[in-house]
Length: 541
Ligand code: GLN
Image 1 (spheres, protein in one colour):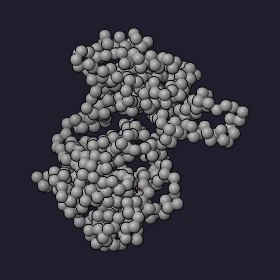
Image 2: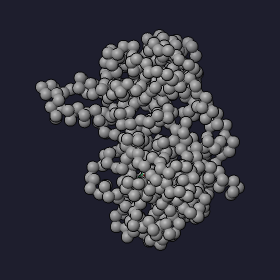
Image 3: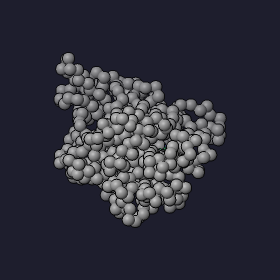
Image 4: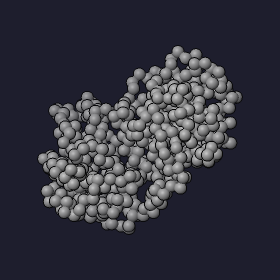
């Protein structure tokens, strides 16, 4: 299908509260447009002053998602890639920090000589430029831009102003979708529209009339409520869309299709409906997800315990992999700090598979190392991701190679056996932001290894985010004792994958495979890890 004449810009803003699922609504609409044959990309604009979320605590902001080109980005980009099976890049996530940095650099270069540099027009122009940048390459029919935060926040103001200007400039090529909450008051047994009305009024004060309202709700919105919202918010009643709570984010594209969000968008923007979206693969995935034939318990051992947003991509990858295996994953999130020698078997005994999570710093590290030991000695399928792999290496060094107090120099600079050490190119780096080994790197897979039978490829590309690496001076010792380096970076000779010979499934990867798992292409390492865990469960029943 050919490209349409002008790129269309759709903005998604949020009102009333945060956490309404703007990222999922944006990804779902993009999915429906993509399924109708349109080319789509999505971008997230974050109103905070950090240059990127790489320096943010996952406690507050969830996981940091890494793109192919090495950008540290908001976790919503993970949803975009998982839903759409597209690749995003730095251009898909812009923060206020990045906008200001660029404007200040231009000012210092003298690009605004004579001007007083101000929020309007300089900051808003920069915002507009980073929105239009994605459309300029003429690659996409639609650029969806999700604005982080909630309308009414001081920090969101320049973004709403940029939208106002773009709407004025682009007319029909531009559309604003506002996501709000319609709360249900149990005592009154009523859905309340007032917060939505106020949120739209705030938008109007800033000069933006939303074209479509998506109303998040726990109860069905009947026509009279929709009519009321439409009347008070100046919106056609067909453009008031219900977004009912659902138990899986993967259900949302179908709910939005039922509500005709994509048709309303296309109608408003004067475009052809083209064919009915082909969502057959998506529906098959959802059917398998909702009708599992088996179930297993998998442990995710990390520093943050129950904070699911900190491990978003890993959890979604496990869901994808469970679906391929027609298996429901009962995920047990365990805070590694809580694990000690005495309680470890109690905490881990009912698990059929163990995944040790990525992470930074010393907190909870001992629990992770003990966990690697437990999985190795009890022959439980083990998957170590980034720091998880490093913990498996440290454990093997201490308990099999007898290198007492072996450690990573990240945790102990004085260790006598630095089996994990800082990378050569990292030694001189002092700045913390955006300076890790980031983004996609090639990795050669050794034939006859377990990972070769999984990837079925001689060379793979995976994304990285770390400063430390396997110390090659110990490699022979490790290999002679059964821990093999089965994946190597061809350019730098870095060990990227380790696996155990005499274990059913024990794999550690220095990279982050979770960033590449999508609904259309679940990641083979996760798929096979779940398969191995199922086998383990059957054997131990
Ligand atoms: N902290 C480790 C390193 O920097 C691992 C990082 C990670 O797990 N993403 O090498």
